[in-house]
Length: 288
Image (cartoon, rainbow, N blue to C red; front, side, top):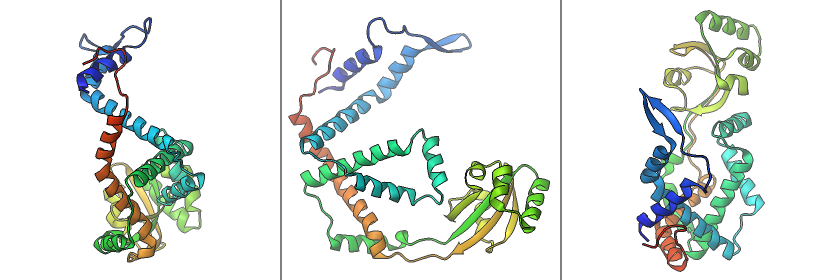
């Protein structure tokens, strides 16, 4: 079906029902007004057909999974959620990242469940599998990438001035609790949230101005680093040497990676098959 037909249908949908709120003025630029309808029209022309196709595909896959009775078991969802949580050094950081992105644990569970259902559907209908030989081959090819890089367990407080930073260092050396000071003094979000505790971080995860310095510090060492944002009070709690990859630890991630590659290769043909079998037509638009 041509995109023109879809565009016509979507334009009708976006216009809304009769009696809806009239087109409104959104912003004025030196007297020239941009109206809501102009924004919607441009968004549709740029993203509409592709977005609509994507939504149709999602519905077809969801319907196919429902027809086959494919569901995500709660235990599977929780297991996947645990793997996501493990990527964060502190549960509070995990929760904060979700809130900042407008999400929640419940929304994330729904997304994980959808991903699991899609995976089960494609694996079952396309008879996909990953052999032990494929896993071991992928492990050998990705061994360096799978290794755990060197890391430091870092604490951090951000303040405005050198004097404030020096005062904090003196208090910490005198026995004051770093996390308590971070919660009351730090300008960084992690200060209020986790007491400035970043957990273990590897190279490249930190802002450039403190990355190299943090990895040159010894356990227990305190240092003040200047930047455009202010003064960073750093303390390294522990260091962790690089650790070689282990097959037993990495194989499930490798299995996911290989299945994902196989799914991507077969998905277009499977979606084309579902579209051929489906009754898809624009509503409220003339036939092409």
